[in-house]
Length: 436
View (cartoon, rainbow, N blue to C red):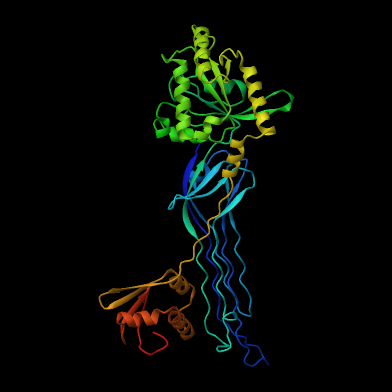
């Protein structure tokens, strides 16, 4: 089964907690703090593996969680960092944040990687929190929470040559003739509902990857007939072979077929119109094909005189070898002298790293007789503090006072005994005191 889209959940590892500890050695009076820091949580990393071709693995496993860092120890021993979780993905995978729809990366080369969820920092032990005023603090920090998010993976097939055209024009038959691929072939529309890949071997050791892309229909750029599912794979191909049923066996006009498919490709992505294209005039073994080809060439010459049109028959293999030779020659010319469009395409494939904006400041709102303080910065700090000791409460109070929370509460009417809530914690406001 070919899977080209998946939604998964990733969670980086939390940082290890710091610890409160003191030196308790013989002959060392007043040994001082000795609590070590916690280790950093593991990152979640996506890495391209050219051995993969689909997103099948993500159909059965949708949750990826890295390990948390090790907790600190006494005697000033640091906890070890957790190993990173490396998730293998096929080349041509687009990584999108499901909440913001922001493209995080577009990975195309083997070994290319991106950190999609960064592990949390380890909490500091009381050694790091000692100051001149408090040389033996009885407080430590919890490890920072690792980043978590939902990710959408979209695979765009990485093929050198893509076969496009209406359903039942002979694309699958052509792929089966020139490669070892065994696509499903049938005398009905949409026999192919997922892309098929095949390696085409040419003399002198030359070869390329060719994809049989599912048949397009009118309105595909708007999603008609799973159009978006099909068209996104065309974006990766360097050369397009447009297969046209020259016999008109479906009752359609070959020239109209060619116009409609090109229009759908153009409406989906205007850059694809500039991609090198070869027309494979297929089914030349059928009656009326010769006459239809003559009329087709005349009409095409009026609007696109430089377009290459090569008559073939996938069934009898007439002209197939010549078509493959021409395709590899076009590929070689692109490799030697990349066009402006190819250079632009390479620029679009760079990895984007999203930096989180710092969220500072606070807001205060009133709920009946209670004041609620909301601040990402304060809540993040409180999550890291081990609010079980007097030293930790004092540190929090000093932080709130320096940020101006005390003063703003007084302006809003807070008095002795007023309840103040921050995140999941509730405090009693004490006027004139340095803590709640």
